[in-house]
Length: 189
Image 1 (cartoon, one colour):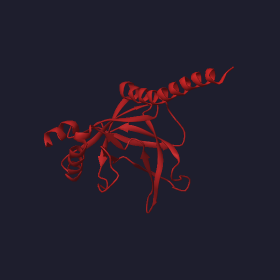
Image 2 (image 1 turned 135 degrees about the vertical axis):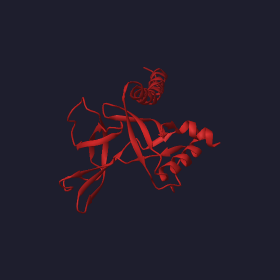
Image 3 (image 1 turned 90 degrees about the vertical axis):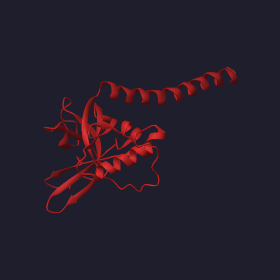
Image 4 (image 1 turned 30 degrees about the vertical axis):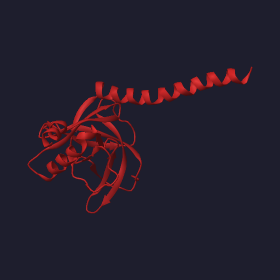
C-alpha cells in the first residue's frame, strides 16, 4: 500500500472527528435545554472586579451550601450530586448532597465541593458548573450592570432559569423580577 492511499483516509478521519466532537457538545447542551426540567435558582452577589470577564454574566447562587454533621469527610474538589426541592415560590432549594446518585427521578445536578466551614455549624459549599450566562456581545456589558444593580437592590428578585437533565445543567436565561436580562439590557441602551 502506498503512502498517499493511507494519508487521504487518515486526513478525512481526523477532519470528521474534529467536526464530530464540537457538534456532539452542542447537541448535548441543546438537548438539555429542549428536554430538561427547568428550575429557578436565586442569584447572589459576587465580586464584580474580575478583569478576565468575557461576554457573559457571572452568576453565583443563594442555594450553594448545606449544613452537615461534620465537614471532615468532605474534601474540596470532590464531585457530588446536589438534590433539589422547590419552595412555595417555585425556587429550587438544596435538599441534600451526596457522593452518589440516590434517585434518578428527583431533580439533581453534578457539582463540586467548594469551601468547608466549621464555626458553630458545619457547612459545605457546592460549586456549580453553570456559573456563567453567555450573551450577545452588544448586550452582555449592559446586562452585567443591570444584574449587579438588581443584586444590590433588596426589593428585586434575581434568578437564573436553569434547565437540568441527568445531572447536567445549562442556564437558559437570567431574570430580574420576572423580566429577562435580554429585555432589560435593551432598555438600558
